[in-house]
Length: 314
Image (cartoon, rainbow, N blue to C red):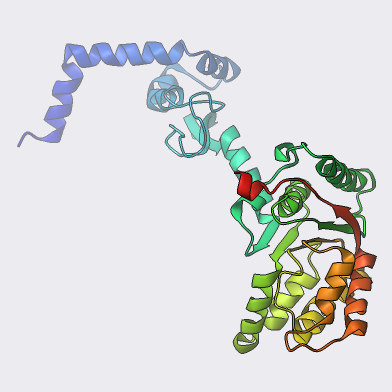
């Protein structure tokens, strides 16, 4: 096998290799960003420094800048995905420093926003909802979206969350959960954390949590969320324990602390009271049901959503 130093010597003396090296150098020094950098550091960059830094300069010009050749972080063409090179002086030669690129910063912001929404058993389409995607083909949707915008506007003007959320009610499939998801994403843009809870699954999880000794921990997360959204309240199998010790405790704490709470349900206020009145065992407890409803009324403003069932029409 030919020794490596002899191979390198033969490559360097090869006319085609030398020509390619000259073309690379020409490409480097004609690059506008490189020219601006050399001019800004003219007192530090001697011909010798320029020669020893040529590989770094070529590495710089071969990569994309300001994400002009990358659709997103996953499709980044740079050596380090999500980062772009910057020319810097260091140790007597030109070096490269890698900084987060524009697409990388957008990705970081998206992740930060996603971290603001803690979901318990919520579907992905609800978690991706936005105000701009809410179809305004029904007056009730327009009114709901206007109320949601006013809630966000109030926070922007006062830097304080309104204490009352919404009780969004209406038939199955008209977009109640989607409205809640859109509000959660608007709040996430403002760095306000929201906990979204699909009530039937959440209550089943609470029963299991007793055996796992994690009930208190999960309750604290829900009780103290900066913004809480209870989706599909009334669809659960009702028992005295879930009504009084779980839902009632959560609502009482949030009412006392002035924490905004949003609720979606297929029931009106009165229909929900009827649901809470009769337990799974057939026991009638109108007083306890009325107490729960009063807490809900204190925490929310009712908004009726009407229209076609989008789940069936799509």
